[in-house]
Image (cartoon, rainbow, N blue to C red; front, side, top):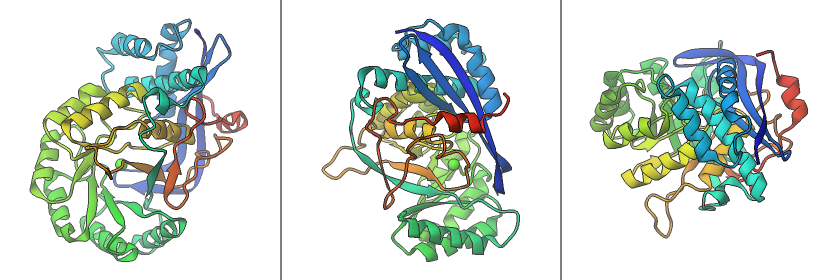
Amino acid sequence: MRIAELRTHVLEAPLEQPFSWSVDRTTVRASCIVEIVTDTGLVGWGECFGPARVNAAMVNAFRRHLIDADALATEVIWQNLYNRFRDQGQKGIAVTALSGVDIALWDIKGKAFGVPVHRLMGGPMRSRVQAYATGTYRLDEGDPLDYIVREIRERLAEGFEAVKLKIGVDFEEDIALIKAVRREIGPERQLMLDANHAYDALDAIALARRVADQNIDWFEEPVVPEDLASYREVKASQPIPVAGGECDYTRWGFINIFTSRAMDIVQPDTCAAGGLSECKKIADMATAFGIRYIPHVWGTGIGMAAALQLLGAIPHTPARLRPREPLLEFDRSEHPFRKAVLVEPIEQHGGFVDIPTGPGLGIEVDRDAIKRFTVEA
Ligand code: CA
């Protein structure tokens, strides 16, 4: 079975309500969707995390190495693409583009064998996964202490038992928000913090100490991803578990995190860190280093399906009769085509999401929606 066609779709849609987080503001949602077709007529879908047009250009740079390649040889193709661009492509766009291609090839492989990807990877380790709600972005107007607490209330009503709060905007306001959200959700539900690398180590440590009594599950991206020394300082100087890794890439990026014990929880994005092939390796490495793996998820239902397939195969760390299970990041912020690209969108029920059991990624992509949201690359 050979690869006959490679297509990239740059999807984009304006937001009704633009939103910000600690380091940026957005007025649109955009994504690069990868479509690979085999000479037998099988179609595989993937998604790249990051700037959509740049990802599409990079995926198209892979074209001559993909057409006519053995579609089932995911490892051969991964190595070939990575090695050809290694000198300038160890991180960033070269790897996010490779991720989208790799995910599409696993979708094809699952369809060729009639099983979901997590079965090909040796699962199921689990059939469903608990989701946590991501959101609480800042709006252009209003008091965040009002509208974020209101948003949290909506998530609880939807059934979520775990929520993540965006911080890193203003030190004192962040602390007030953390306490307000903890009051709203009660003492037991899971609460995580995400600073999107907006603090230095001093502020991150000071903030964490101030909210140490708020029962926080993890403090995500307290400092910039390049600075593992600051990560280690934050981890060593305050009691909240430290998470990160959505801006890190491949086994070689994560080995540095693992060996230097820079994080308690790693969060590779399946659509960025190297696709399903590479993230399974990173997840297995995390097991060996005794570090928790909770994938970062951001994008359309295609990317979420890839994360769910991986979650179906992530080993328990450690194994026990009632092991701690990984969580699914479930973005609840505005996204006009997150659900639209799937014929049957991925939904949460009572805060849990079933891992799709259909062939490949276990999803059916809605071609009309892909067309409707496609913009000129
Ligand atoms: Ca994050």
